[in-house]
Length: 112
Length: 116
Image (spheres, rainbow over the protein chains, first blue to last red):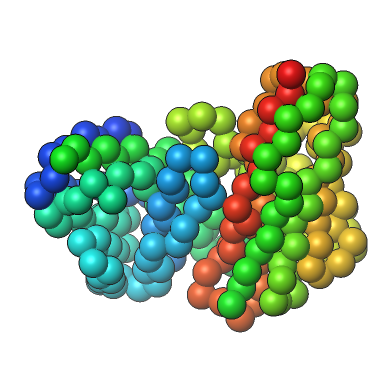
């Protein structure tokens, strides 16, 4: 059974700093997704990672996938206040095309 | 593309009322639709998965008589919370899948349900 563990669960940091959020998963999966959720809102898709070594970047966020280590990372560069949100990773089991297994989420607060 | 519309966005009602939430895929036919529940500061909890024209598959611990799901067409699924009580207050999110997307699920905007 696929399980997804996300760390840290909460992160408060100053603007301008860098940090990485980690997403470990327990069994083989080659499809990993990152989402952003603002308070009171639904989920916004950030990154789709579909192969080992995949790296995607959008602005100050960069996501990567290492299927051998069963690890995905979301790296924040020179954080700004607008990036404050909760970030979720989710993985697809090998035997499913649609049903996502979710991490617990990382609540990120960036202070000016 | 791949827009999912969820309605209503916020409902406040008295205990004992039944509340229906609609989830529509606006520009695609959804193979599968999912209903999630999210409590404050927690991750999404999958309640049920439904395919058009067949009965929904409920996750363990979710009462199917309490949370009625109807998936009558490839573009519409409804969740009815029957005889709602304060403990049913939560944020409910639907999502829809189709075969020609690199995203496994496309999410609606969510419905905040508050039972007094």
